[in-house]
Image 1 (cartoon, rainbow, N blue to C red):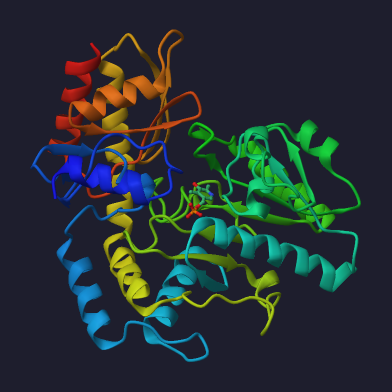
Image 2 (cartoon, rainbow, N blue to C red):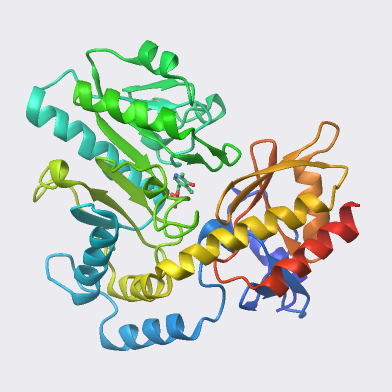
Length: 392
Ligand SMILES: *Cc1c(COP(=O)(O)O)cnc(C)c1O
């Protein structure tokens, strides 16, 4: 099918829930994607931080094919090796204690919220279920995670929402103290607010939040759905903040492009979710877990150091262009935000770059770049050259 045929068919039969760019993608290799007509795009998006190994990665493809041939699915009522091995690696590399596997970020955050409320219920009984989240956060699209999201624009249409969330300003202990109370059981945050605009929290603030949580026996919940799995140059961002959360979630990049997510708990929380209290049919799918094992094998410590170096290089190259529409860059590793100056619209900039062969994302009022972690210097240079040509 041609791009035009695909777009027409999709418009007729697929719900219009996405503000799509007028581009169809057919295949890819490395950090390059191609339309059905063969038009090339440099990918600075990874499908929103998912395809960390790029496209057509041989080890990833082979592992998926082999596992699909062997066993494509079995119920979680039975044990499988890929699930157990992936959980072991995640725990050993982070200091967390055990894992619940799910399928998407919003769903993982539902599990995180359930874990926090049950921890508190088991210990203190009812009336202590409020979770403080941060303004400008994003935690998902389910009825509960919309409410966990600290942005008013997400609290419309779908009433009644789940009760039990209060919001505090990021990087303000004063605001957090104001939101606190006897009804609180947890604080939930992204360490780098992704959808909100690639806004890293201050290290001192995160440590102070951790201390306040310990003092009150609130759980510190970290949403690493976007920042996790090597994106920031460490396996999880919390490792660069020198904290161990009580529980955290991951999703997007965990299986390099197949749907998988999860909740990890520390030792204090390892026995909170017990038989019958939480489950999901597709969770820990062996094909997804086999893909996740390839991701973990690829993300060695040396590879993660290289992610940091690539992020620095890309930010330097972009800042050196001195483009009229761009201000400073920020972020960690290959999770990069670019400030868009007054008088320019991020959506229009994205459209122009995409038309000219560079896929980028927006976040908050700025630009957001999440290239595949395997992106090469040549591919980064090609993307920067498109920025220069289109935006100078
Ligand atoms: C993308 C994202 C989610 C939602 O993940 P889905 O897989 O779309 O449900 C939740 N939290 C953060 C931080 C995200 O970036």
